[in-house]
Every structure is written in C-alpha cells, then in structure tokens.
Length: 294
Length: 305
Image 1 (cartoon, one colour):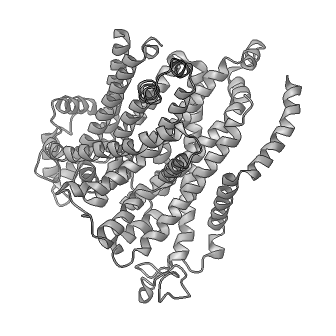
Image 2 (cartoon, chains in turn blue, green):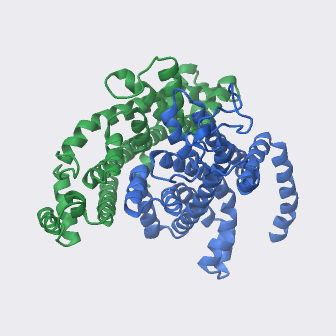
Image 3 (spheres, chains in turn yellow, blue):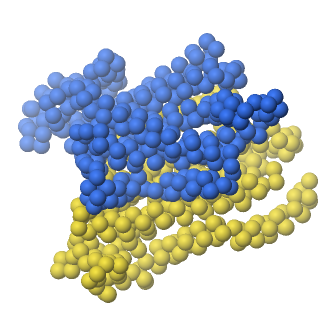
C-alpha cells in the first residue's frame, strides 16, 4: 500500500506542477500575489518617499492619469501632502500582515477544533458544534468595535479579534472531512496496530486535509483583509498615521466630490488583492481538491 | 419530531445564554461604568452615589441576572448619553435596518436564483460565465468601497439618487444594492451547484422518462430540492446582514440600529451596544432555528439523524 502510494506520488506532484502552470487563473493570480508580496517586503527600497512625511504645500496633487499631475508624485499626494504611492506600497504591508496572521491563527483554531470534533464525535462533537453556533451568533463588527473601546486600538488586537471570528469555516470543513476519513481503512489499520489518537490525527488524517485547509485559508485571508479595511475605515482598526488602505479610504471619503481619485486608488488595490487571493484559491481548489484521487 | 424540536430549542436557548454572558462580561471589562455615566468632572461622591443607584456595587453574577431579567421584559436600561430608554432608541431604529435587510436579501435572491438556475441548465454558456464573474467580483469587492463608488457615480456625478438619510424609499436603493451584492455570490454558487446535482439525479431522469414538460421538471421537481439549502443560507445571510449593515448605514447615514450602534460605540454608550448586540444574536438564533425546523419538516432525514 505504502509502496504504491510512493510510486504514485512522484508523477502526481510532477503533474500538479505542470497543471498549475497550465492553469491560467492560478498562474496569473499567483503572479499578482507574489508581486504584491515582494512589493510589501521591499517597501523601504522602492517607495519613492517616506510614507509619513507631511508637506502641506504639496497637498492633493492629482495622479498621473489626470491633467496637471506632478511627475515627482506618480499617484499624487493625500490631503496632508504625503506621497500617495508610498502610502499605497506601505499599506500593502498592513493588509498582508493581517491577512496572513489571521489565516494562520484562525486556521490553527479551526483545524484543531474540526479534527477533534470529527474524530471523537459524540459529546465532544456536540460541544464543539455548540461553540461554532455561538460564535456565528455574535456580530463581528460590533464585537470588534467593543473590543477596541475596551482594550484600545492595536494591530495585534485587530489580528486576534478577526482571528477569533474567522475559524468557523475551517472547523466545519475539517470536521466533515475528518468524519469521512475516520471510517477509512487506513485509520482503522492505524488504530488496530495501537497508534495513539494523537498520531492518527496528526500523522494519518492530517496530511489528507491539507488541500482543503489551503483552499479555505485563501478565502479567509481575503475576507480578513476586507474586514481589517472596513474596521480601519470606521476608525476601529489601524490608526493614523500608519498607512492602511482602509484608512486611506476613510480619508478619501471627505473628498468624494472634487478628488474622487483618492477613493479609486486604494479601493482598486484592495479589490485587486482580494480578487487575486480568491482566484488563487479557486484555481487551487480545481487543482488540489477536485483533482484529488481519493 | 418532537424530540428533534426540543433538542433544537434547548441548544438555541443555551447559545443565547452563553452569548448574553459574553456580551455582559465584555461591557464590564470596559472599566467602571459609574465614571462613564457621571462624566469626567464628577466628584468621588457622585460616582459612589451612581454606583449604588445603578447597582454596580453588587456582585457581578447578581448584576448579570438582574440585567437578563430586565432584558427579557424588554428593559435594557437608559442610555448613558441620551436621556432616553435604550429600548425606545432601538425600537425606533430597528424597522429601518429590517427594511434594509429584507430588501437586500430580496435583491440578492432576485439576482442569484435566476442566474444560478440558468447557469446550471446551460453550464459554460455565456450566462454561466457572466454569473461566475458576478460571483468572483462580489466575493472580492470591499462592500464599503463599492458603496462609496456608487455615491460618486449615482449621487454626486449623475445626481440620480440621494446619498444620505432615510427620508424616502430612494434612500434605500444604493444601500440595498451594496449590502445585497455582498450576499449574492454565496447564494448564486449554492443555487447553481444544487441545481446541477438535482438535474443529474435519478428522480429527474424518471420525470423526464415519464414525459413531463421541461418547465414542470425544472420548477416542480428540481427547484424544490434546491430551495432547502437556499432557505438555510438565506437565514444565515440575513442574520449576517443585520450585523454587517453597520458599515453601510454609517456611509449612507441611514439611521438604523447599525448607525445607532456605531454612534453608541464611539460614545462608549454601553447599554445601547449591549442591547443591539444581543438583539442581533437573538435574531440570528431565531432565524437559524426557524430554518432548521422548516428543513426538518421538508426533509425527514434531518429530524431522524
């Protein structure tokens, strides 16, 4: 059995790479995402200006696609005279930090609870399902805003709050996948030769859930980025002067009539990032989950 | 069936109990409410008097039961900021949010049901592709940005629609589209996937073999089965929209409970925040309870398992 799987594993993963490169949506979204990631990491090297530097004599300069733009500021300047391109580049950092951290924390919580519920079943399963229902009954924005009122605003706080709200989909999917796996021959075999529950969960069932967890992870990462932007927009997320796309949109709101480009640039960046992550997830689902030989 | 209903009722009750404890505790972590009521310039004597008057000096568990007891009879206390009872404030705002929620759900269903059904009948057709684009774009669209872009186009540039307030039905058009679009992708995917499953099933083949008309197969046989998951997801989405409408109501100055909860959070007006959070949780629990019971009536497998 093991040998056959090993034999199959090699052509399978080679085929996976070929299919990934042949899949236009995975290729394109993956490239866009990688580009945004690189830009975020090397932000200090490529940002033309300090994103915090004020210059009130050069405020609200229009971007390149408007008449009378200043070549020194490709995307113009914000109402404080800060370079919009530099703030956009640094804003990608906040979005990605929050998206990736939330994905890992909520993924860890949800996968663990889902594995336990699906494997042990019975009373344990009932308790965990009850926790999921309780979490779903709590409105995320209201609770996140109350948490800011109680503990004050911070990036760590925002990450933890969003994480505590986005693990439910991981838990539900992992639970039902574990339920299916628990009745399979290889789990029975592991149990009959006396493997511990921990080994069966981590070593036997776990690897079979990786694909599904990755796909959910992309969905939740995009969602976390949108929630952070909305919270920052409302004033309950990242705070000024830190560059965040949600905060840039909050500022743009006061200039909708005459300087609507202030609104389009960070919004399009936010939309593009969420779109790239979602398309990557969709493509990965086609490659990994649907193409699985289960 | 009776056992299923009792079990389901018990778990709904338990969920509400835990949610109410969490909401109560969160408000009490916020620091001394007596100082919040008295204001910053008050003397220690004033604060002590307020503490006794509101019962903040008593044990936490006693306060919780007192709060719950009053909440059950619809008394959420008085606002710290406005000289009004919380239930009055919430009750005048609730209809606006419910109107927005219902119209947004109707908008989402009006788009996702026909497109999802047609996409399932003709996979890979132009309509299937259009609906896929609508779903993919909708999933990545920041709702509040979409709302602001609509304000610029339809409100400021074209001047077709009012951009703030809740004076007329026209004020609800843009908020409905913004909030409804958020719920559309999930409903559309569900309808399409359910419809494809149903059309491939044996009972549809039998119906075709019997010589039933196309429309009759589609609407009488296939759609009926698709509606079961659509009902449950609609209930969940409606509950999520009541909580999510806070951003939309704030942008359009639509003065429903979302707008009120934002205002109350900014002012640290805790009784109002507590009441609204609890009301949204109650709505969610009752909606999912109703959806579960309806589905149990429709599908005997649910109530036995």
